[in-house]
Amino acid sequence: MYPLLAIETSCDETAAAVLGPGATVLSNVVRSQIPEHRLYGGVVPEVASRRHVDWLGPVVDEALEQAGIGRDDLGSVAATRGPGLVGCLLVGLSYAQGTARALGIPVMGVNHMEGHLLAPFVGDPDPPFPFLALVVSGGHTLLIHARGLGEYELLGETRDDAAGEAFDKGARLLGLPYPGGVEIDKLSQTGRADAVALPRPMSRKPGYDFSFSGLKTATRQHVEKAGALEGEALSDMCASLQEAIVDSLLLKTRKAARTLGIRRVVVTGGVAANSRLRSAFAAAAAKEGWELHRPGRGLCTDNAAMIGYAAALHLATGEVPPEADVAPGLRLASRA
Ligand code: KG4
Ligand code: ZN
Image (tube, rainbow, N blue to C red; front, side):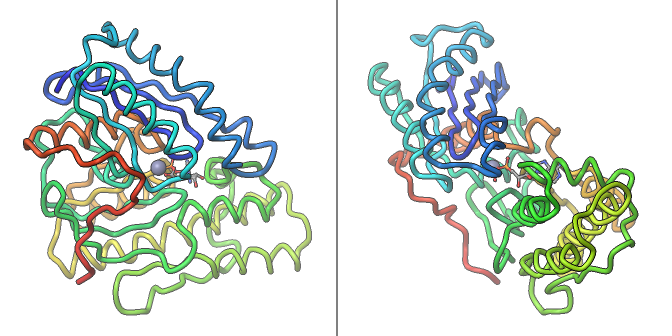
């Protein structure tokens, strides 16, 4: 199956990676469309699809070159099949299908969230199951009990906005550019996390679900009352919003870890790049005795190495590659 070419085009990053024997990453190229979408305050699906068409060929060429191989050397191809923007996904899937057909090699569709879930272990041919995983991205907030490869039990998820969405929508209300998570992270460094009292939605409710839309409303109300924020007031609001999001995520993760008696905890996805989330989970890990796993920052946000890694683990089990369609299911067992 190696060398394996992996492609990720589910949203606004055009990415390709090559993996070699033992699931080692030989190259990992990411070309971000963020500067372009920033002009519109968010991702414009049609623009994103067209950029993937323009960029995917050169990005794959670069990944092959960095890995020191030619296209004819490839043993298999993998591409994200969902969830994501359908027009964007189809670009990567079509490219993968075409490449595989031309070379007569297997092609595999990979679930984007499984890529995020396994990202902390990229390069390890034998990831340490079982673990509890908080997967936090721009579109998803999932708390998963991962018992083994493909054995994922969904414990909780967001009832409305995703954690990344809470950052991005909050930032927009505060007049900050897209993607807001990074901006809020930066401005929070000088803000006071207890400056603005914000709710911790769902924190007292049973179960492990999250809710973030109330924070958006609270932010809007604060801005309406205080007017356009700048300087210290803006940093304070950012730090308070960030703290509320991180706190909500940590509360439910800690509750699940304690209830289920799990000590190996994974935090992954774009929002796992957040500095406060990283420090809060590190502190909780020390206190609770967790073995904490997080991807390096480059593997938190969208990339193709995590997609190739998930594909490699499945292919190594001798699994027949599923049709590379755009069905977004992660084959999660129903909630406990
Ligand atoms: O995983 P990802 O790259 O794409 C999706 O699959 O959605 O996650 C993107 C999300 C965005 O909402 C972005 O604002 C958030 O991750 N993000 C952050 C940070 N870096 C990226 N949120 C908070 N702090 C950060 N440093
Ligand atoms: Zn993602």
